[in-house]
Image (cartoon, rainbow, N blue to C red; front, side):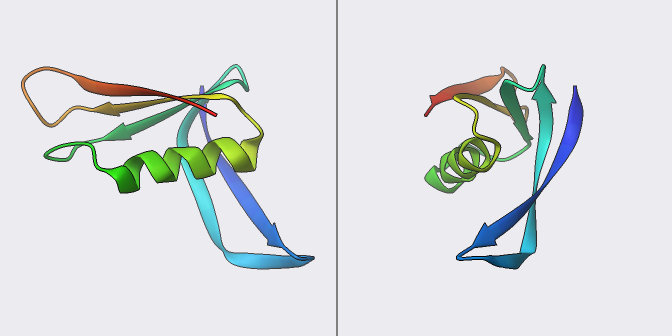
Length: 76
């Protein structure tokens, strides 16, 4: 597992913003870790962007803020 930096292209132009997935497991699964009150749609959208950029199909979004683990499995 490792952090992975992605450089984005849009119509033959390199975008200045870089996306950093927290972990990529076996180059197949994106693991995005959060510590927030609750998982919101913007967090899910972020994972969908990671999936698209990395050409992956599965992301796990995990939130460690509360007493019990909150997670979502996101499939593209």
